[in-house]
Image (cartoon, rainbow over all chains, first blue to last red; front, side, top):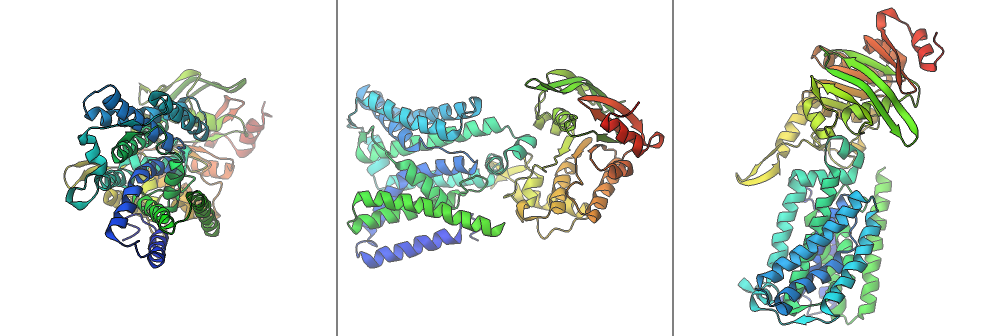
Length: 311
Length: 247
């Protein structure tokens, strides 16, 4: 069952054990409100982690996710608040800004033959700088209610971002696990020469993957804007760390060829529980950064050990 | 009438001229051995035929149509298959998915969601093909990377044969195999010929070439220097062409 759903047992166990530990250490942890807090916080970088999963399982990398989130947040808010365009331009603006940034990444990776690491590291700086320029370095406050609904409402008692994450995750799972696009993504990450030889248009595939990753950053940016009622140029700072870590501990192979959206969702929940638990235990944010970094390295390390054993 | 006709193929990598005007015709049901020393241009020539490399000059005709500028996927669709020396398999994907890589059949999920890869069909067809080849493989759900060299070769051949190819190019298919497995591959080549498929066999093992091919083409420094019928030649002559000692 788990393997049919492309979930690794280990990551589920980690999630359960971590949650049990947090529940023992903090009585508040299991309260309904706190659980909502966890998935609400998870929703933003969870969507980013889906983008990371697509790109990494194709043996690519997108370090610009967090910055593109910030750019999307600012673009969407600027259109509606500063330019006073109708509310839905916040949605269109965020999604298009994200997708365009991804398209630039994809274009340079495929046409310019510049390594994805460098291109997206450059975009990390460019998108953040652009977000600060557009906003003049200040948050853009005061979005219309239609947008706030996407971040702050609770239809059926569940926060809207959770619905958005669930919808995006289900569609993405379907794409990665069950469509030709998904099969070709994994094949490209597994053996680029094989993918090319079997007639897969690998440049087109890569281009679409980076655009998809950018789109995810755009969706995450929109959620962020709606949650805090602000187009925030510093939104998503260091989120690429969370997103990539969630994807890797969810079972995505850092070197490509294997990846699962449902696994990534487990990974994102692990990161969410970890952050939330450390907050409840009043651990300083500085230490949390360290903890997340260590989890990333440990996850890849364990993966390497396991692969070496296998071969 | 020739199935494949190559006219004046030229290809350089930087200042190195790897193909210097290749002319060659291959007929249906013909098994042609392509031999030559390392660097003679065999692999470049084959990758030009499949479309992985684009040519500097020349024309490739396949079934009387110009395919010179078509991408690899389009040429595969027309019936040109290649089995690569490095096998071109995706090691973490399972056997069935590898066989259908790049050509996954799709259906509508619940009758309306498009583009859903028909995994059941892939598995069933893959199993049929593996059985037809008489291969022993634990399960078609095993990642290809865990199979032996011979088993991987079988998967690569199964992939080439699943879509009714007209021409199959095999690059050193026996190089990594045990003796018993080599015989299996040679038998498969015979089966392909009987089914009307033309085969180009690249190999350093002249024994295999003489066992499988009626016609032997020798490449040297990017040119065809000999085009021999098996009955009219012998290993010594072929070797002397390969090393450039002939005549």
